[in-house]
Image (cartoon, rainbow, N blue to C red; front, side):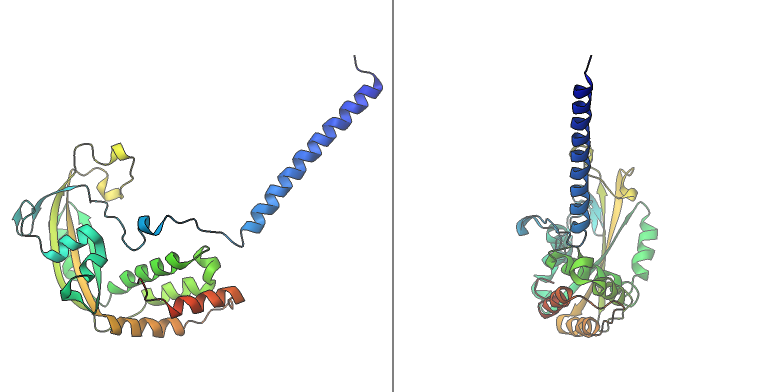
Length: 254
């Protein structure tokens, strides 16, 4: 049995423990709140960064047929380059020196539907979203914070302006399709997630549309958009400095 003095000491000890717990929680909450203003992005090493070389969800699927016949023979060089190194693989070809290349890509089990999609894919309506995605990757890859923190309202406004823009001088050059079969075991053993349209398919068609545009032509149009952005919320001093930096060096690595 505890004496009154012992009971009082026990109560005081419990109060100290409770106060210490509350104080510790408060510290974590304050730290979390403070961290909301400067969310640091932890990116992989540049050699492992897939921002500029996004992976192909069908990469491990075997090519069993192409527009040129069975197997994987006769695939055009630009298609091979795209499968191996994505966009920059095509842009490294002599044929596309001085040009930016954009690829529209779609998959499905119905070749006729995909052919209709490819036929209707245009420079006017479909290219802007491809350019916007590439612009977004460029901004994100240069940001030390989350893009909204790094650039403020400028980030979202720029992406929307590009996606709604029109880019003259673009040419829809070629289309091509391949048919792929899922490898035994698929990607389940690696624990990778696939887009919904790939989940239950054993064989799929992959359709590509290649659009090119002169480098200087696209750069001039993008510069005009970037310098003309007006935001309702003025950027902070740090955000204005980040915007100026990205504008000056935007096309390095674009």
